[in-house]
Length: 181
Image 1 (cartoon, rainbow, N blue to C red):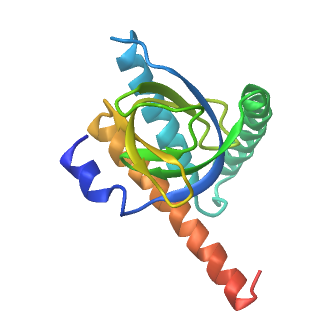
Image 2 (image 1 turned 180 degrees about the horizontal axis):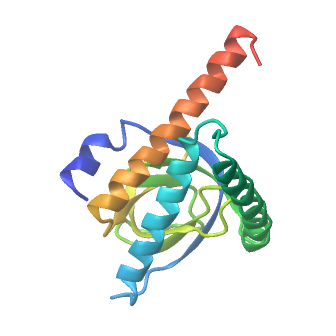
């Protein structure tokens, strides 16, 4: 875990959600780590960029592009639903440096996992990361798994994504509290 991850985790920024999560044992010396890193970065860029999207552009070509992108997004949403359909949903608390989740059975601190987290229902690819079990448990009884091997770019994009989700949850709570829809 980097110093930056320690600073922002676990007491810092986090996002509570019910996500499809697949857990498998981590392969020692897993192959294709750089390929998975590239996929994770692309996934996080797509998700965070979509969150920052603006209004419909004025130019006809740009409007056509936006409509085409919306159709592709719809197709991806259907694919994502199929891909994650057989993956159990879990209540998680996602942080830039790790994730709290319920683990099956007793796991010893240091047990390594390969986690696949579907961060967006509209995107058919999971965020795949290796994580190690800790002995830290949150108030809900979920175990903390620290992410291992994230690049600085992955960490930055993940933190940006979590911040966007956190900001959205705060706005929704504020609207609910103020009675505004």
